[in-house]
Length: 326
Image (cartoon, rainbow, N blue to C red; front, side, top):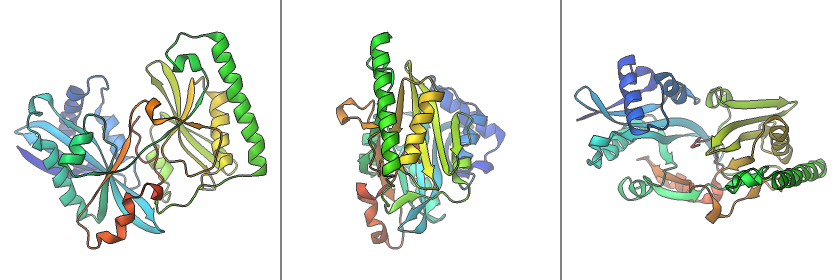
C-alpha cells in the first residue's frame, strides 16, 4: 500500500471518482458526489485542503483530510488544520495503522506549510483511537444551546397541538422579552486567545454551499442551516455578527428571523457561547444528542510553549462555523 498527499486541486477526475466510491462504500446512508467533495474541501480561506490518499494498487482504500483555517491567536495569524472526512473501506479495517499512517503523513506535510496544530471533533467510534493511537488531547466538549418550538416532536411524541402551541407561545415570550432586554443592554462576546479569522471574505468561502442561509439587516448578519434530524426540523445557527462581532442583538435577530421564516421544531446553537444571553438554554450534558469533543494535536514547531494555552477551554471560540459536524 502507498500513501500520497495532495492539495484539492491536484487530484484528477479519476482519483476523485475513486475517493467518492470509497465514501459511498463506507457511509451508505450519506452518499456523496465528486462535486460535493470538491465544494466541501474548497470551502475555506485557502480554497483548498490537504488530503492523504491510501491506495492498494489502483484501489483507494483510505482517505483523510486536513482543512486549513487562519485563526487569531492573541491578535496574530496562525494556521490550524481541521481533521475530518476520514474513511478506511471495510475490507481493510483490520489494519489499524492505515488511518494512523495517513494522519502522520499529513502532519509531516502540513508542518512544512507552517501549520501549528490539527484540530478535530471525533465521533464516538473514533474518539479512543484519536486519544490513544493518534495522541490527540481533548480540550473540551462543545455545548448545545436550544430554544424548543414544537416540544412534543423533540421528546419523541406525536404532534400534540396544545403542547406545541404552549411551547411556541413560551418561545415567543422569551424572544420578545429578550428583544426588550437588548435595547437596554447589548452584551458583546468575550475576547479569547483562539478565534477564527473573518478576513478575506471568510463567510462567503466557508458557507458557500446552498444549504446555508444568510440574512443581512443593516450592520447585522446571520447564517444558519435547517436540517431534518430524524424527523425533527432543526435550525442550526452557524454564526451571528454585528459589525463582525457576536452580540446579543445579532443573536436575537437570528432567533427572531428563524422563528418567523422557518417551520422549525427547535432552534439550536452548538459550540462555545462567550456571550451573556438568556434566549437559548444550555442543554445539560446527559441530555445532549451526542458528545462533541474538541481535540488538538500540536505539530513539531520551533517553540511549542507559545501555544501552551491551546489546551485551556476558556481560550476558545469554536462552533459549527469552525467545523460543521452536522
